[in-house]
Image (tube, rainbow, N blue to C red):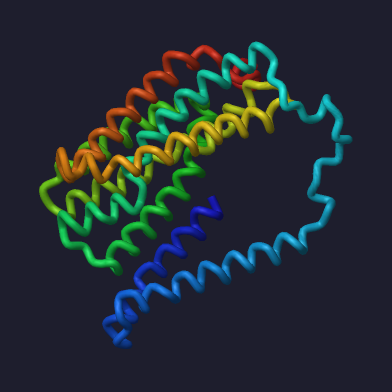
Length: 265
């Protein structure tokens, strides 16, 4: 949640090129160069912070096979294989509506300038960060899987509605409403992964599921341009939303009865 708040603040810097162009006479290319410098300095700062971490933050247990395992039990393998496949579908669908594509859509359809876009994405980031807090509260009441599914489906319906919004203000309202729900499955998903496998399998389970998500999301942005050109400017929103709903149904049908031990108790 803290990281998402920080990201929301960082997004505001996206308005810097427009400010430099309008007030200081920078060229388009030169106005973007300070952003790369800021990114470099932030990366260096992170490295420096890591150097100051104490060794006390490491796991206290001895690093034997009982503490960490790269092998999953047959039961865990079955669960992680299904989860990885569904997470890959969700991530593939998400690749159709990554932030750069959404920014392109707002700019092309409504002529939204860079400063306004940075403000939109910053507000969206704040709403997303706040939603993490409520996700935990909802999960305590109805369970992790139900929270994942029944917050994600409405967000994907809103995503599809964004595609057909006739005005900027309507599209903006739908988009922000979508962002206030769309990431509530993130903390619940992470909690579910580590809760349904053995303690010593958690690192391997997290690694496998994250890898499947990252690989899948690297594919869809590369074909989004072709889809926009051959079909419709808003087609990625519809395709992404529909695929994500398929993912939600898949998660619900396959895992609604597989509950973590603390939910059974």
